[in-house]
Length: 145
Image 1: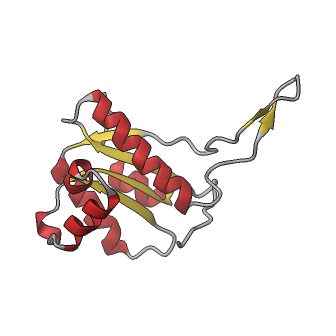
Image 2: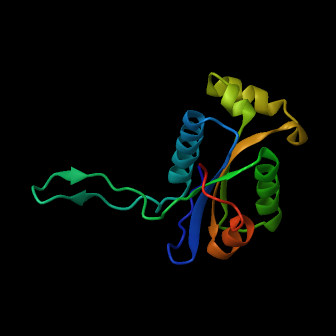
Image 3: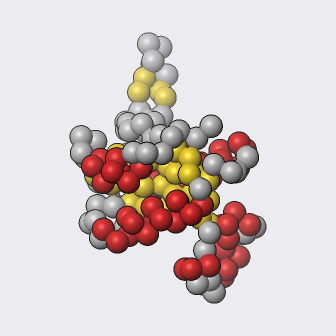
């Protein structure tokens, strides 16, 4: 599994989720995307901290990760846009309706293997890249409600 180390000063992460999804589904999509970003960006989670009594609290993300809302069409457009840039330090994870409907990872893998890109409908993406690129592409999107 390939991982990236991204600079907190020059990079950021965002989630863009289908704003037509119910709140519980949005939370699920956000957690799946965040877990994958956490695995693929090796320095996104910082070190553990300790409270006054010496109790350890596991490290959390050191980057804010806004959750933005968009249509499925806009999500697909963003995914295609970022892939077209061929940015070396891009980390992009997508979550399709196939992923949403699959009960196991094996089922997901089988369904994806037989799917054409044009037929995929994305309900969420997570993006980590240079701030400029993310701001340019997502600056007009609002936080999901």
